[in-house]
Structure formats: C-alpha cells, structure tokens
Length: 312
Image (tube, rainbow, N blue to C red; front, side, top):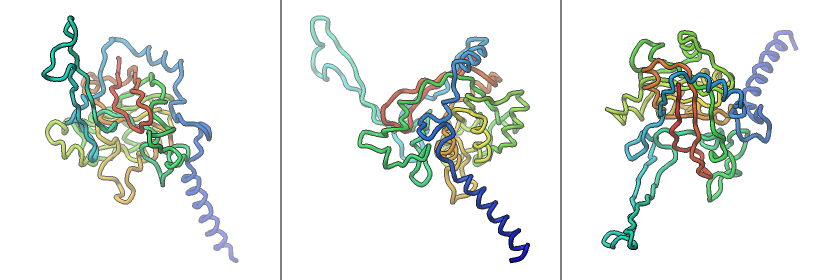
C-alpha cells in the first residue's frame, strides 16, 4: 500500500479517535461512582470568598411566583386546592373556635423558576456518569440523581448581561450566544469565571412573558453547545438564564435537539437553572454577588421549583 493510503488512514484514525474521545463522556472526572457532578467544586473557602462580595446587603429574589400562569414548557401544569377545617357549614372547633386552612398542590416540579437535576435529560437512556434510566426509575421516583440529595449551593454568582453586550434591551428569539460572545461580555464587564461559580445570563427575554406567553415558550435566545462546554470546563456548578430552557430555540440543528441540556446535565454534571428573574440585578449593574440556593428536598425528583437568592 502506498504512502498516500497510509496518510489517509492516519487521518481517518485520528478523526475516529477524536470522535471516540468526545463520545466517551462517562465515567465522570469526579469519579465513576459520583452522583454530585460539579457541585463537588463547592467549598467552605468559596463560601467565604463569596460572602465577602456583600457590600450593600441588598437581597434579590431570583425566582418568579409559581402558579397556573407561570412559564412552563410543554404540558406542565399547576393547580392548588384549599382544604378548610372544619369543613364548610360546620362550626369552629372547641371553645377557642379553631379554624384553619391546608392546601393540596398538584404540579410538575419543572414549572416557573426551576432547577434541572441530572436525571432530567440524558443521552440514549443514559444519564450523568453513564447511569441507565431503567436503573434509576422506581414507582416512587428516582432512586439516585435525586434533587433531594443536592447540597445547598452557596457560592459566587456571576451575571453576564447579554443585553449590554449586544447593545439592545432584549435579545431576539432564537439568537445564539456563542463562546466568543460570553468571553467578550465577561471582558467588557471586567469579570472572570471561577471554579464553583454559578453563572446567570440576562437576555431581557422574560419581558415577552408579560405580553405574549405563547411566543415566550415557542422561541428564545440562549447559549449554544460550544458556550456550554466552555463554561462547564471552567468548573461552574450551575448555569441559568431568564428563559424557559437556557439554550437557544429554534435549535441550530432540528435533528439534534437539547444538546446544551445533554452537555451540561449528562456529560458535565452541571445543573441548569431556568426562568431566573435577572432583570433587577441587570438594572442595578450587578456583575458578581453572593448566590444562595437551598432547594426544596422533594424525594425522587428530577426537577424542582426554586427561589434562589442573590445578595450584593
């Protein structure tokens, strides 16, 4: 066989090796038995550094109220029922006339402001660290990769203001935020990304929810796959935005849907935060802050409604 054949074979083998390395996304670099992903990058020292960012004591609720009209992807729904004690028509209880209310809430956990766990979205029925869906699903929820097992996230938060970067109050539906855009925006804001950080994007898109819910859910600006990989490789523990799904919709390739979710949740072990109310932070020009999240510990869940807090 000639030299040209060997040269061509070498090129093919190199490409095949690179593709194989790219596809070999498990076991996790955090260990073959790891279930925590990038939250392993949290530390007591990181908490102290983040706490030192508090200068004014101003607190920002990053979650939107959760209810029947909250932004929700697909057919996810929310309903609440009030249970009255004593039942209607009956007198108060006892000489001190006790009356009370309880509630029954029926809802998807992936509604409003939410956190995606590693069991939410995978690749060919495999999830973070290569775990198979059939080994995780039980009649009572997920047995592992459970959001109830995620520790509190107290760390440095970084807001990347893409409206400032692009010079307009709101990005366009479907607009892709590239790795170059992220790096340029960080440079303009004089910010860096560090290990253990939580990164939030302000796109202005949540304004659409107020006037056109159907449009808000049908399309959105968001990060692309390359930007997701770069951010994850910096060691961040979670990435969020003021959109329903973080990544841009429509997708770059209609045949390859949700690649950003696959990249972050399954491959990189980075949590996804959605419908984050970033507008007040952006309005105050906040770039870094103390980020605090103690998510509800509902056992067996792959998503959960949250209200993260920013303190500057």
